[in-house]
Amino acid sequence: MAKLNIVKVGDSALRKVCRPVTAITPRTLRLLDDMVDTMRRADGVGLAAPQVGILRRIVVIEVEPGEVLELINPEIVEASGEQIGTEGCLSVPGKQGIVKRPSYVRVKAIDRNGVEREYEGTDLLARCFCHELDHLDGKLYIDKATKILYPDAEGYYEYDEDED
Ligand code: ZN
Image 1 (spheres, rainbow, N blue to C red):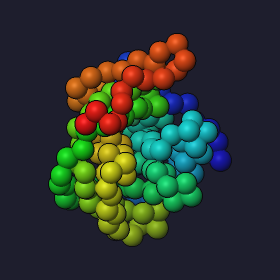
Image 2 (image 1 turned 30 degrees about the vertical axis):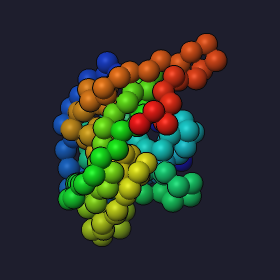
Image 3 (image 1 turned 90 degrees about the vertical axis):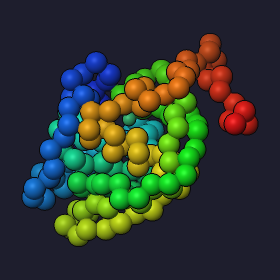
């Protein structure tokens, strides 16, 4: 596996609508492996292909350590509820934002074997599905954040989850 370069806000790759994957090739599988490796090394819980400069509809997520979700051509098929919380992005270093998201999301996607599967997410996983799928349409959380937070001298962000 190889660590890929994560592009940062300002790079045009982050603003493009990605194309669907039409065939799962050895190259697709290698990309999935490399994306998981890159996400882990960056301490992220999700990574979308445009973040490594690949304009294809591919996302990897690891909210629960060891439970990697590899989503090819993912689509949200159901969303409900609401949650307000902090969000960050490997492509937007040094910031967090407060973003409203659904509290429940159901996603349909193809896995690496070409099998269509469905995934349900609540709380952080629901937030992560929404954040990563937004990347595939050129959207960043900073477009939706009601407030942007910057770390203080100790590296802490001011937002207190209990304020909700
Ligand atoms: Zn992101």
